[in-house]
Length: 76
Image 1 (cartoon, rainbow, N blue to C red):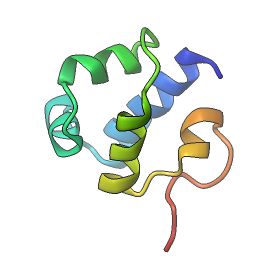
Image 2 (image 1 turned 135 degrees about the horizontal axis):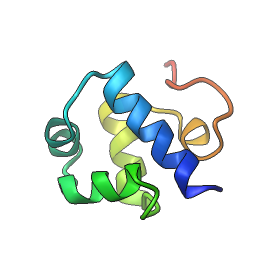
Image 3 (image 1 turned 120 degrees about the horizontal axis):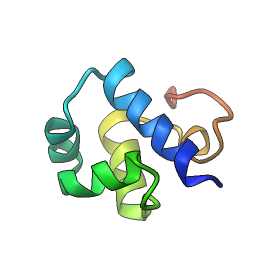
């Protein structure tokens, strides 16, 4: 697990897929914007609350987030 790679995937998701500013992205998940910034910069690992928020709010595949493998979205 590489923090830089995870941060890059979060940044890609937020900017290219969802087209959201950090503030809106963080607010929808109930996470501080400063934490989103640290994760995107590879300075912090997203915790379980962060990952649960990604899944609940955006149906993001946690395997994709952590490894880059699989589909970005979970399809119901």
